[in-house]
Image 1 (cartoon, one colour):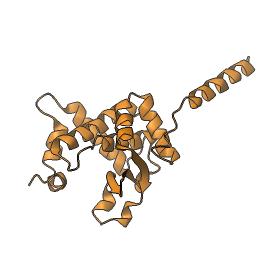
Image 2 (cartoon, helix red, strand yellow; image 1 turned 135 degrees about the horizontal axis):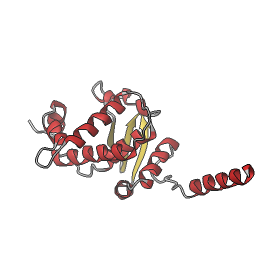
Image 3 (cartoon, helix red, strand yellow; image 1 turned 60 degrees about the horizontal axis):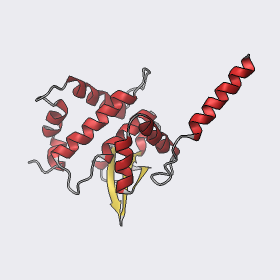
Length: 183
């Protein structure tokens, strides 16, 4: 009986991994590939479609090589030549796959050449939605990324029609006022 169970378990595991999508066109990093598969398996087709349409490459990047202020970014879009990239701060390379997936979801919503308040709100709200749907009932620790996601989740869940707490936070943030030229 134990052998039958073992054979069934191995079949299920191999069946699931055989149908995992290979996102080599988007990344060559196995952790990012796992995050993309997690998004796809959990209703993230909009994210996958956005990434594919943008022909973006997703990778971890050492943000400490940037300006002092940029070293603390979680993720960003960048362009080199004609290639568009989503860069995720190396600090989060070993964060939970769910958390990395949320950063990718956020950045996939940025489509405009110059960011707007509305686009940033949509991206941040998307990040919070995916955190709510992907996080599991386990301990994630409290690195800066997990703290950010938990805070966004709380804002998202506490928002009401006519009182979008994520929008309020972004609109009142000096960082975003600078980034979005809202001064």
